[in-house]
Image (cartoon, rainbow, N blue to C red):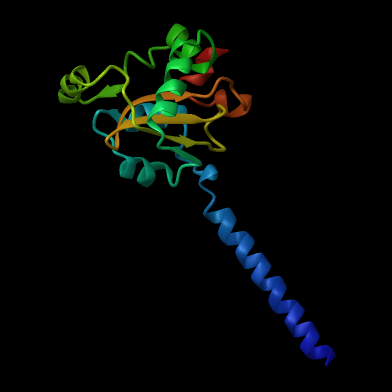
Length: 166
């Protein structure tokens, strides 16, 4: 009886360890590719799709499909004079050199300015900021916004753009 009890306890422990390992390995917050510089180099406004983002950075930590809420959030941060976005604009060429698919500019000109239908929010151990939100219209990225603060100085000092904010 003691052997069976020990075997059951051992099996439960193995299941618990296996589950924890699976959850850790599938925790997309730990995606090594999710950096401010990598986003700059890989994401093309007007061309990168939701599926592309998931292939690049995994499953998002948050998805917001509420049109009104998404645009309200974007408008708030777009008007906010501070935070990482503002510092990147003042101290780097980040926003001047982002990749843009030119035909998409014509499409964006036809839609209401900043008319997004969803955003995907990602967090990551190598991001160096609170989060990044990708704003989409019909599953195509047209905007992004970084969290308000640098959260990891060590990571930020390694990133091509964030290190210029010190």
